[in-house]
Amino acid sequence: MFELPPLIIGDREFQSRLLVGTGKFSSTMIMKQAIEASGTEIVTVALRRVDMSNPQDNLIGAIDTNRYLLLPNTSGARNAEEAVRLARIARAAGCEPWVKLEVTPDPHYLLPDPVETLKAAEILVKEGFNVLPYINADPVLAKRLEELGTVTVMPLGAPIGTNRGLKTRDAIQIIIEQAQVPVVVDAGLGAPSHASEAMEMGADAVLVNTAIAVAKDPIRMAKAFRLGVEAGFMAHISGLGRPRWEAEASSPLTGFLRGT
Amino acid sequence: MGFSEEIIRYRWDHIESLIMDKTPYDVEQALHTEQRSPDDLLALLSPPAADYLEEMAYLAHKLTIQRFGRVIQMYAPIYVSSECTNSCLYCGFNRHNKITRATLTVDEVFEEGMVLYRQGFRHVLLVSGESPRHVNLEYLCRVAEKLRTLFASISIEIYPMDIDSYRSLIISGIDGLTIYQETYNRKRYAEVHPAGPKRNYNWRLDTPDRGGQAGFRRLNIGTLLGLSDWRVEGAFLGLHAAYLMRQYWKSHISVSFPRLRPAPGGYRPESPVSDAQMVQLMCALRLWMPDAGLVLSTRESQELRDNLVPLGITQMSAGSKTAPGGYSSRPDTEGQFEISDHRSPEEVARMITFRGYEPVWKDWDAAFLKHSFP
Image (cartoon, rainbow over all chains, first blue to last red; front, side):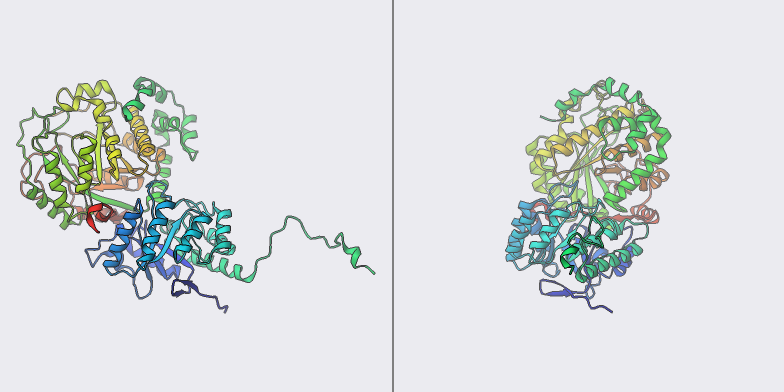
């Protein structure tokens, strides 16, 4: 079979390029099976959903940390201070120092605040966290975060949960072109073809939650996204042909130059 | 400044006639669009929309799972006092009603909290009548400071306060504010609130504004169904919620639509609302605001609640007692109204699971508030 290069984030290697979220599932059982079917190695969990005081918390308990990197996220934080506080609590409770940084002051569209995200990233990187910031598809912000030392950038394809696909395609293209850290397209991917599209463009990985969780059959959908991501990535490294608008003429206009 | 200035633009009678003039064509337009206008909201509340109820329910269901997932967030009320200086005709705590009244001590509130904590709740709502002599700011702050060791989120449903008081409550650990206008119809409002501080319509109407300005993370508004025409109430409720979303863009807005229940005092609803009408209202609000929380209490029957789970509800209470001390110390005090769904929290959670949804007990963290961690 084909050997695929691993995804390297921070000092860790991953074979899978699909990250999955744990929100919105109808039961922990289905969530577990969907995670399994997705082939993922990185699972993100909203800290607000976890009862840190309860070692038997069913959300954390459902995720085998020997198999998956548990990536706590700060969803719900409105500013840098709240996000930092949440990340510290997770670490104090025994999570590894990894955090998906989400600062979303508006609880309706859940769009990330660039100013507060940058502030929080700076503090958390200094404290030794591997920071994966969720951002709008803003190439300059992506570079600024990378310079601070975040281990990825995670631009959104469309607002969280909208299934609209790569609405920010052009800006993501620039981010991919400029980035020195893995680019993980996060949010808005509604179909495996969207995930393929992001990977074909050269994204290093994608994160999917809603499209899997609210599908009629989340387990099968998780598998579909796995295949979509693999297909897109394989196509990207195989060298995709450029699309053309017209057919190539068999008697080119400059053919006479090669004549005798 | 507040919604009381905005509401001047909408006359009750005018909104009512706009709703009554809507045609099936208007309803279809409202259904098959992505960005709905206020006119679309009115169409969805109109009589002809009743014929499209199944389609509305389907769309409401789809929108809700897309935005919130297959989850229902669980909460429970804690009644801290039944003392009240108001005389709301429909309410069991009306000061003229001869009921046994009680105000819990801070320790008694904690005891109530312990019962709920053991049942699994991490979100609670503190409720009281309007009697600052019994329930004042200092008391509420002490209650919050004590309860926040147990709960991820504490909201209040008490009498309207000023911005500074709300700021103090937030510092003490309260993150959500619930306040119902009861009815947006001024005339009706005056009739059912004949005396007491609650008579001040505008002060009450601007309460969510003051809460938003103070920085509550959650604002929950509502209208008490049965007092006046539900269609017009629904329109005002929807406009009010949309206004709050624009003004206080960092707060999550949710709406409630409690129906009047039998209560001490024996008030009969002037404009009863049928199950089908309530479903229409709920779906119209969901289609109007895909991101708003929709809250359902134990006022409604077991059967109806079970069937409403997939139609757009995001939060449900369970096992509620509406009397101070009802969970632990004083099980015999009289409640504010009669509960209809008497199942235990565990039974309700099982029903939610059976319906293909996950009951979520914790969806917030006290760590979001400043006091909790360095």
